[in-house]
Amino acid sequence: MEISILTICYLIGSVTFIIGLKMLSHPETARKGNLIAAAGMGIAIFGTIFLYQEEGIKLGNYAWIFTGLAIGSLAGTLAAKKVKMTAMPEMVSLFNGMGGACAALISVVEFGHISHDPGSVDSVTFLIIFAGLIIGAISFAGSMVAWAKLNGRIKDYAFNGQHVFNLLLFALIILASAWYIFNPQAGLNFIFYTVFALSLLYGIFFVLPIGGADMPVVISLLNSFTGVAAACGGFLYNNPVMLTGGILVGSAGTILTILMCKAMNRPLSNVLIGSFGGNHKGTAGESKDQGNFKEISINDTAVVMSYAQKVIIVPGYGLAVAQAQHVCHELEKVLADRGVEVTYAIHPVAGRMPGHMNVLLAEADVDYDKLQEMEQANEQFASTDVVLILGANDVVNPAAKTDPSSPIYGMPILDVELAKLVVVNKRSMKPGYAGIENELFFQPKTSMLFGDAKDVLQKLVAEIKTL
Image (cartoon, rainbow, N blue to C red; front, side):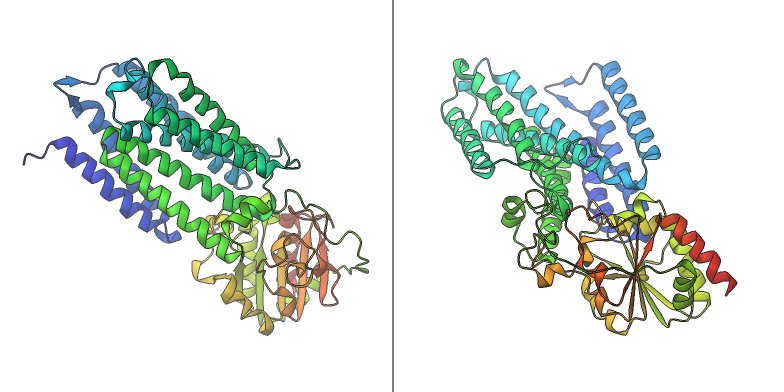
């Protein structure tokens, strides 16, 4: 059996994808893993451009190909370099949407090639084309809505009977696709483009009502959709690199989605139908008289933290907004120099995308061993002197355990209230992304430290140094 150079290029690309994904599992190797996977992709791309040939015919239109590569590379590089950490979830959604759009367009192009004589194509090919079209279009439209919601361009929206509408729309897409797959006729080609339009519409209404802590789950789910759509392209072209990459992205996204749902103690169906934070905003805590909250000064906070034995920092989206991860790491080092044990408690859905807080703290070179997952951290809070909460809200709200009427009821949270003292840094008493009031803020052991996280932490570091 003769093995071509192109086959070797594809093999290298596939192997580097697997190695890169493995290395992404740890912050110390993540950057190198990303570069290795990118190098493998580069080898596969250029191998295809210069070595691919079918029936003796090589690819042409090099000017168009390299112009597209140059524009895409330049745009991606500039966008990645300029993006702020707060906008990282938006960029993830945007890039994921572009992947879904590419997969859908592959189906559109390939259908155009065979639409003049659909009867000559087998049903399996049509099944792959329609699958790539539907999944890619849903991923694209849904990711664009997620991007717009994360940057505040649109808000959560739902109407009575929307879930029924979505189910009927999806059923129509499947039925129309099945009809054409088993009855391909040139006169019915409009069905294909109708399915395309309906899939885009479904992607929009699929994500519109979802908000709150469910957004990271949805982003992960849409990422898996893009992987599956890309795998369809791999099947269509018999391309092992596309197939391997698509399967890896699809399976990794699916596994991450399942793990995040498990961490929230909710099945995926409940996430998609329940619309946490979408339809229930403001329903919990409005009618309750929570009592009064008390404030704490920078000086008092510095004193209690300096003379504590154990401090746990709980990062949230507010830390990302303030771009305060570096000064937070400085606070950790200042306290450590005074003999204080400092760790971080990470909730699985803190922030706006999967692993948002891990990425944020890794950027500041925080030791990965100091990051505690929720289960590990919850075992430590009872023996903790001070918990410092930086911008986290819903993931520390006791209503998840005490208020059955709350939209977050049943979601595992960080049990920060077990610590001797809880200091919460927020800009104001405004509710978090889920739009519900936090009972923690009114508890006797909780003190509020108002202000921008970066400014507050800088003053806190300066004050501790003078003690």
